[in-house]
Length: 203
Image (spheres, rainbow, N blue to C red):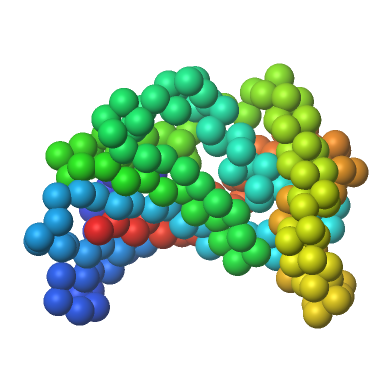
């Protein structure tokens, strides 16, 4: 996320502001004066429902890959970046969006922003990491198929939505995940993680 000047700031409610930067990035912020912690999330304005059929599961796969390394941090450094400060870093993929979020003491705000921006803006997508993560995601797909609650949820979505994108599995399939490679993943990332497609939310 590039540091740049705001082009538009609107106060939506007392203490809540929406700022749109010249890059197109939207920032929603809330000041809570009696709190000493910070919670920040970077939301991608697309999710599993936006994937082409041959790329099912790519949004979830990219979520995994962003934690495998950036231009400045390897996987271990990412994992320790906020945990060493007593903070928390995580992510999730849904049908409508993908979110990367972090929590820490307010005094660590600069580190939180640095880690999140590095994670979302500078992924490495190393081919060897892609191969390793394919195995991890295949196991995740298998575990979901073996879990009655997950299986019922996916079956219900399929029955309700049919061939509509909302009825497709968020994790993808064994076949689509096996077909991923670093180039295809980077191409999809480049088209979905542009500043105008991101919303940074902080309190």
